[in-house]
Length: 290
Image (cartoon, rainbow, N blue to C red; front, side, top):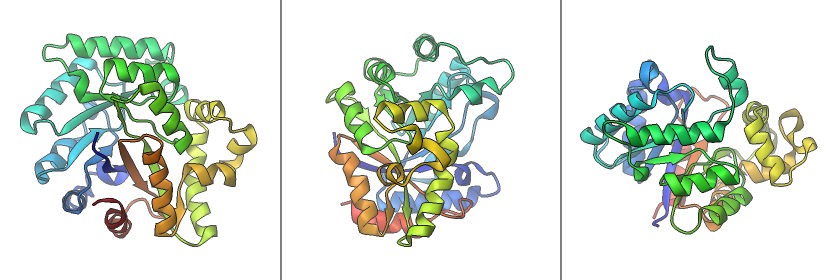
């Protein structure tokens, strides 16, 4: 599979107030040669129109949902929206679905986080049974553990792991085998000052380390409770979030390709996440995209 370099983005892309700026950013990403934009958001009542708007605003850039929660997005409505995007923009939208996290799901009225693997199987069955099904090759799973990774190979185009070091990418490739797509998200901090870079990275890590799916995945890889405490140890940060000058950050991203990734979805972290870090994505494109 041809190596791809993509972008992962959150709130900047979903804000209606910033939509014109986001579409301008999408056009530049397309011109720079990035393959795909991964951005979060659900379907049904919470459909983020950014998916279709980015596709309409760019001639080549693909878009993926990273990640639609199977607890909160009705599969029938999901299939309908995916089909509409496919009709309007053939082969450019990829549906990413995931089981989310117990604290997030349990906090929402009407949902209880039980048997996530079984619920994912049922959700995929429902996508297959929809009036216009979502084909396996147009969907990926947010997978971390071996069972969900295996399901990604069996019932989807592949896997989109989030918040993982390169040793997880190697593990995921081993489970998936040679064929399926492996597209990990990799957060980076392009900042040579160590104090500043670690401060930005630790603020980002703190929230994710509080979510059991991520913390348990890191424990499975051999990281300890000490590594996970207080926003994460420097040891964990150094393998999880490439930081520093361009050469060092690019080397950290390259580790995921060397470990078996087909596509890396790069999330540039800055002190101000409300603005798009265009300079950093330009520098990364020049270094990573042939």
